Structures are given as structure tokens and as C-alpha cells.
Image (cartoon, rainbow, N blue to C red):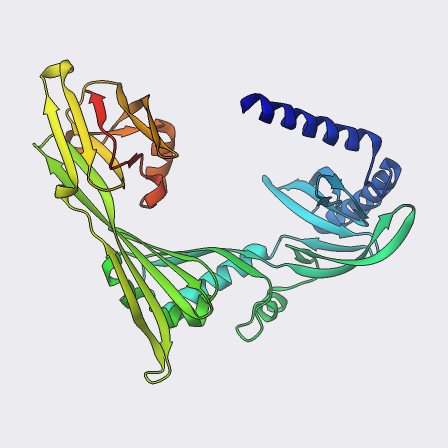
Length: 386
């Protein structure tokens, strides 16, 4: 089976290289590309000299999006990167009309939207909203294909260089918000079990309907999503833990899934279904055998559980774990090593990467369920040499 995949991957790579070398599917020449980039460089240099004196233009890249595995058409526009006052910036040049589009006001639009949503949600001081805003501003341009030009339009994440903050306010107005909002995160100092006092289903529908939203709290996080038309799914991941013999601690999430549907009678969203997955110490069999560096820790679960594992007073730098790996209804022995990360009050956490753990802790965000180090399978015994 492995040789079959290797053979097919090799054939695919050879085909891709042949297409690129022969130019199959490419509707333009390198001379066309160079011409677009030279014109864009001249326009960008003139704009920067006039408006941002001292800026250093270091890269110009003509816009030619991939279609499948080749760049099929060349657009008569280019992305230009430059340094200005110690920061990297980008601007966009449309050669058809010579207009310049910049990223100068994208940050302003982003902050305006986060402030607006925080105000509408009713977040107090110390709680905030974060998101990524993409303007998707539409411009009219042309493409170059086989020596001919054709009218076209593209959407870019820049604003026209002549735009002011007032123009952006109109572009992102509540009545006619243009562009796309992604990666919506809300940070609260309250418990995730009080999610309905922070962001109600009705408020989610009003502000974020159709988008995925994550609410981070002090003891877990909550996800909001839209499913099958008007159904809103709210899943609460409430952090919980179990301690065994004062030496072993397992951290995991209890999950509470609520389905909300709109009630015409009550004129609001109401809970239509509840599904709880509540773990406890009874879901784990934890045994410690031996003394000192010859201690063996065995963990077995009664359900499939994602969890983090801590050992008190652990002196090792690495810990070896052996277990039965379950795959396609079959199992086979597997061995894996984990690094030891120092935590508060003498607890040591077993991690895949210390660097990743440090970055995560600096972010101040609770780990997601999928970021738990261990995915304990109910049919496996996990044996640690600690």
C-alpha cells in the first residue's frame, strides 16, 4: 500500500513540474507579468514618495491566482510590500486606472467593530471582543490571457488610499456592513456556566448569526454556531479535574450542549434540546506502584476522554508512556515520550512541547478540548514510568 501511494505521489509531482515548466494552462508570459509589476512599482513608488516619504518598497508581486495547480490568468494589478517607520505594510495597485489601495485604515475598521460589538453585548470593563475584519473591497480591473485583455473584478482586503475614517464608518455601518468578519473571540472574567448572562442566543443571532464565535471564560470556554437553518448550537466546555492519592491530577472538560430554536410564541430563542457529558473521578482508574524513580503510573478510562495529566513532585525531565493504539478496530503497542513542564505548587505537567506550552500560557487563553495532551481511549491501558 505504501509503495502504491509513493508511486502515485511521484507521478503527480512530475505532472505538476511538467505543467509549470511547459506553461500548460498559463494564459500569460513572464514578459506580461514583468510589465504588470513594473507599472505597479512605478505607481507605488510615486505614491509612497508623495504620501509616506522614507518608505522602502521591497517587493512587488503581480496578482495571478491559482486555478487548480496552475496560475491561469494574470490580473492587471499587484500587491506591493514596503517598510515604513519600522513596520511592514502592504498596498495594492490597479494598473487599469492607476488607483492605490492601502491597509492604513483596516486596523481602524477592526477596532471600530470590536468596540461596537462589545457595546452591543454589554461587556463591562475588563472584558473584550477580538475579531479579524476583511474589507473585501471590490475593484474593477482586467485580466491578461493569451495576449488579450478581458474585464474582471476582484475583492481585496484594502481600502482606497483616499478613504478617510468617515468613509470607513459608512462602509462598516450597522445598516450595511460590507466585508467579512472572522475569528470572533469574546473574553470574559465570568464563569462559562453563566454564558447566557454574557451572550444570549438572541444576542448571538442579532450580531453574529451564521458565524462561529468562541467565548473564553475563567473556567472554560463556550462555542456558538448556527446549524440547519435557524438552530443555534451552544456548547459549554467547563473545566473540571480529579486528584488521586494527592499525586496525580487529571484535567478535562465537562461538556454541555444546548440547541436553541426560535419560539414564535415567546418571540425569542429557547432551549429545545440538552445533551450533557459530565465526567468524574469514577471515569478513571488510576494506580501508582513502586517507589522513587521506579514508580509506575497506570491510567485507564471508562470512556474516551481528552485530558491533561499532572504528577506532583515529579523529578524526571521526560516520561515514557506505553499503551495500545486503537486504529480501525485493531490495536497495537505504541510507545511515546512526554516532556515535563513545571507548574505551580509542585505540580508537573506532561506535555508534547515545552515551547508550545509556554506560548499557550502566555496567551492567557484556556486550552480547547482538542488541545488537551492526552486522548485516552477507553479500551487502552496507559503505563507511565515516573
